Image (cartoon, rainbow, N blue to C red; front, side, top):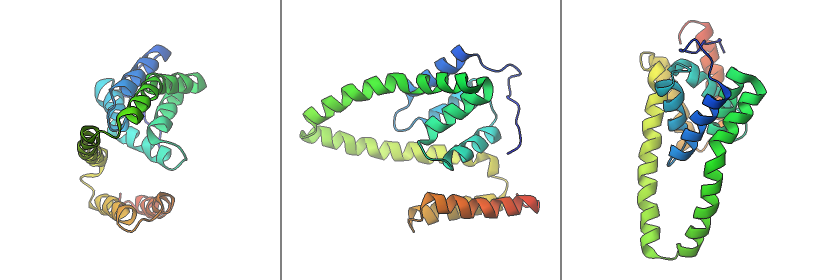
Length: 185
């Protein structure tokens, strides 16, 4: 992975990292990754689309939730281990407390039909949200047909043929590396 300088010439402070990922943690409904991208790329301009996508690629190839890995990776990029810890705590502090409370409420009221219907409706919106995020992540590759074909092939292998993500990343990544070395990506 090539080193990408942040769009802003100044690296974020520990406080800025904490506040940014705290904002992501309390704003993310249906998945924090789209919010993390919005905060880091669009709002704060700490990274460009390409750099964020490269970091996310690394974070998808390692165990753990992608958004947590990404927050830790970005925190470490700018402020080392202490930045990673601050980003992690910012991202997870408030949601941890909220999920403890909501899990108790859900378990107390999950047998009510309106609650079940509400959850079904929310799952539809969450799916649309993830699809929109996928389109944003694909933006750096939109003018590269081979990259688009690789994205679609990886999605089909994973979604329809249930190929383990580790194998999809290994195969797709190997092809992408080879194509990149030949100047095709």
